[in-house]
Image (cartoon, rainbow over all chains, first blue to last red; front, side, top):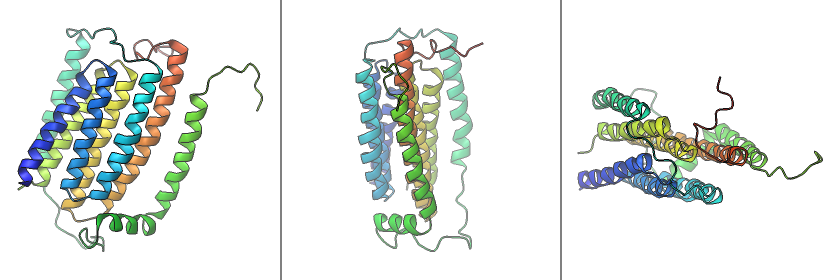
Length: 175
Length: 100
């Protein structure tokens, strides 16, 4: 049963990712990207990491992709652009490089061997408590400093985004 | 029985699709989206390994990756909007002011 769900989800995710990369209209790319992210969230649930799956759906599919949609609609980018020439050298080298990359990665991934549990295993086992409680416990005790640093990072990103996307309609350099 | 190698192969495939998208799409927005696809593949790797190694650290790191990716997408799209206002296009072949 788990195998069936895994293979169905992986077909959905891979086909959606293929459509993200190879379709022409940006709106279609965004919609298939949402589909891919929902597929990856399904994998997270299959791996019994429900909190990460919910954060993926809320933050990635719900906020980041909607931001993409806003920008596409704001800049009216949805018209079909100049058609990519399929015989251009760039396409062939790009596809060849992709094929080479996956050919190199595939045997490495298949030959991966899980390391034996060493003495440095963390104290908290994954199934000791619910996923949310486990992540909350680790995030607010062991990983508190990165958590605070990411809040500063978000502040910097927010300020940078507002400044970059501002309209330059004022003539004076006040404020 | 789904082993960790299944998940690793799947995320390698997703990663390679993202690399192809970054390398030979011309639309800046689609390039940013392929970048997100690569980050999603890495997230999948982290969570799969965290499950099979029975450690919570992978999932914590996934949360941080999501935060950084969201911030990066916001700034990247702000740059795309600013470039569009200057040049009228998001085709990366036309944004070549610094090309020698």
